[in-house]
Length: 180
Ligand code: APR
Image 1 (tube, rainbow, N blue to C red):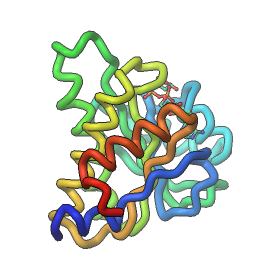
Image 2: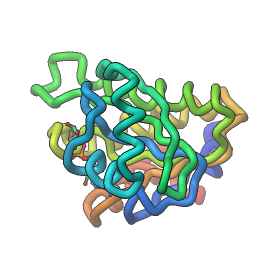
Image 3: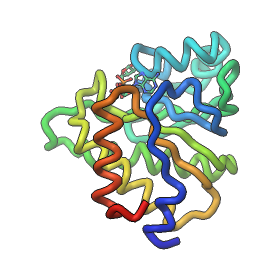
């Protein structure tokens, strides 16, 4: 699949990831997988208490890795929980660890024959990762993965605010030119 083909499979939307009608949504979790604030809090709130009960049985998740659960009361059938790096200035392998979150989540999605998937802007909230830098990593990593995989039909980047939405749009335009 050529890079420009990948573009057909990438969508940037503004909104709430818990309302996305896709096969799986990705949660920006912490290593305990026992919930939190931000998108983690929103997903647990929307999914209901059974999500936490299943998460308790997973034994946590390392940074850069991903684990999957049912979606319960969410429109999405699955939740892929991944743990982004905390931003510590950029000299502690943060870029690689963030890329690994996207790769691990996509790999799990392929394993579970998930065709449509929604990502939040992992690590750019509580974990303080600079938004534009994280956006470039997210789009580049997903683009490379989609070039090599035909299982996934659509990846949505769900931006919660204007800044993220405009950031993703401009990085996408940079990456693919204005061939939309
Ligand atoms: N839908 C989509 N995006 C959202 C939503 C939502 N409902 N709520 C928040 N976001 C966005 C934030 O605006 C930010 O851009 O998700 C991005 C990630 O922010 P966080 O949720 O703070 O996640 P992160 O920076 O990865 O920090 C993870 O925060 O909630 C805790 O338990 C979590 O300890 C972990 C840490």
